[in-house]
Image (cartoon, rainbow, N blue to C red; front, side, top):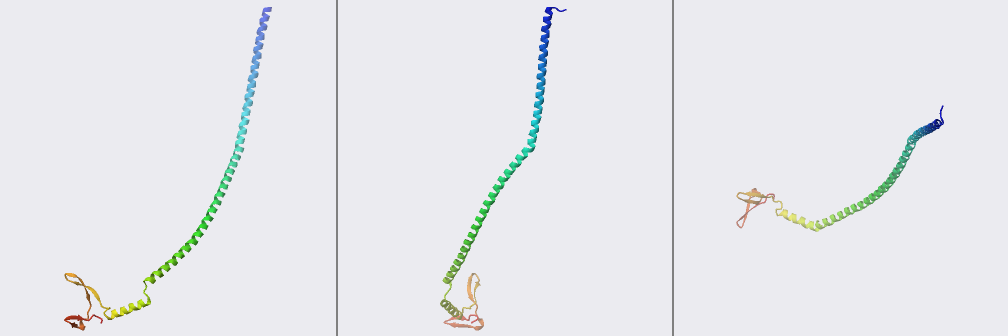
Length: 188
């Protein structure tokens, strides 16, 4: 049988074992709680990941489509503005072209009229009058009567420069006056 001292020692050992068992059980509960928390965290992480994947599949394309739509709208608005400005520029250029054609027609017509007037003026300065033409014809007729149709040429002379010569009618003979011989010009 155990003595009183042994009972106290036994009680102390039993108490220590009881505390250790309680501590072990508390640690097991804490470990279980940590394990449960880890499982919950893992499930939460999986759920969050699944939600992120869902959002990635559904929201990101929607955002991208929205962005594309916005970009498309901005581009279409910009292109409409460019188209409008281009239309204004084209209409302005057409107006400028028509005004330029009008001015060119007037300038060209003016140049033609001015050229005609200048031509008429210059020709009137250098064209002889009817009286001058009549005088010139009379002079030509007088010259023809005096040998104006004579056949003149430059004839070569040996060892000298070429000299002016005239075609004569040798069959018509010679005429002498004051000791100078004359011959008839061919064709008279």
